[in-house]
Length: 300
Image (cartoon, rainbow, N blue to C red; front, side, top):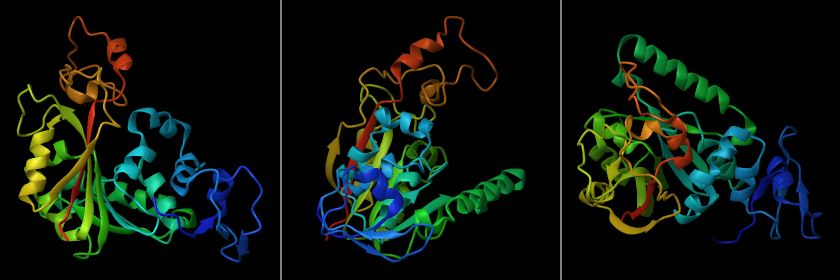
């Protein structure tokens, strides 16, 4: 990762530095609630490590790091603090709580492309609107910088202004878009959003190549080759893959799909039925799912 000097919010500085500031560290007057400090020396922790370790994240969120490996994953995708990053369907904000303060530290931009209310009707639409508003209120905080917002669905507008994003990210969402029959649109929209040379990072529950792929992704698991095919069809070049989020204990053949595993830990189907031999401890022992981690590049 390139080494640069950034405005470093004090709450990240406290997490990042275990030693007194060097003679090269100078204070800069800023917002009294989150003063900025110019760092011109290697901190004990990187900006990314500091964002991940910060008190913005709950203990429950941090407990999942052993399965989701956020620092290694984001470093693999090549993130930098001054990037414009689009996070598609951030959900409850697990990754947002790392991305937003990290990008704020380097004057980068985070675009949260959430659910599209126009894709729903009735009470479901009202619920989606409420959840989006709650999300925005939560991130209306100087520690997160200033987020931009868009949406994604089968009929949504562009993720962001064309050709302006350095990085587009999606974490465990493709099976949802497969169920709605618009997974291909995501790759097309991501391609349009990225600058030439920009990166698309995909993390998804991995279906073994010997298992049959449900086109609707009903189990939550997806073939790696299927993801690559969608990306290449949209114009991307496959760059590389990482096994950082692999879990060899996950056989991907559970009674309630991927939701049998933590953190959902489902114990019954939609009708409330549970197999007679079901043992939830077996699935707790497996941990979170086996996941592919794929990097694609928009050609320059």
